[in-house]
Image 1: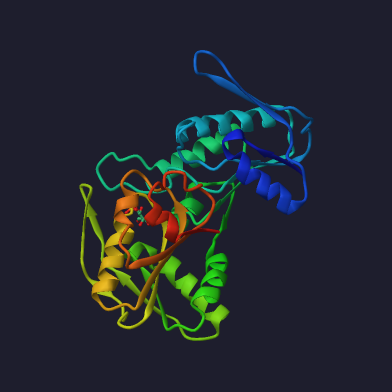
Image 2: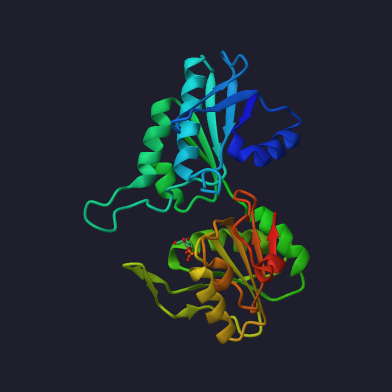
Length: 298
Ligand code: R5P
């Protein structure tokens, strides 16, 4: 087995390599003055089972599109160097939210992602808590593996909220299945019943509407579950609804913390006590002390 971690995901990749007890393979990513670049393995990969790690989000040094092209070219170079089997490990998969047409002639970006990754020669893709699992599985013709963080979240909350009457709430109907799977895992971990509910949410021309909370939260400890936070709007409106409905404590478990500009302010509400995310995206955009103090990165 060979593991390569591209420069933009170096820290994440090192943690994976340490966990596996292996040393990442040597590779080169070279910049040219005109903005183009090249990447290649610096060791023999002929016939090997190769894993490449690249989490696909924008940061201050590298845009998501740049990271994607670096990944594609690197996979191409592995294929041309006769690698036996290539697996792309993409902790955060970009363009996964545009999984269907909502307007005439809309792009279906999830499917195009699959097409370009397959075109350069990957054999398998692995990601975590993708936005729409069915769309992800349908988009790829190759083996598409899916990991989820629910056991990680469940063991965290069973330590923190073990003796509480918990309700798991999805912030929209689309996330009900994800929340239900987490609820079942948490119930199993705790050995006590855990309730469930969801919030109404409609998005039209960028505006979010729908105020109904379908959950019994009064006097109970709420855990809101979602795949990602971008502006923080979805989470903050759900926090508000749970607070108004009398929840005694409110926490959130969200797999990917994208945190675009403005999320700090959206999530400052003291009613949200704790926000747990994974390390697929480092929380480099979280600037406010208020949010930092309640943020837990697993
Ligand atoms: C939407 O369907 C997703 O599951 C998230 O709820 C959403 O993308 C979060 O975005 P924001 O933080 O901007 O509301």
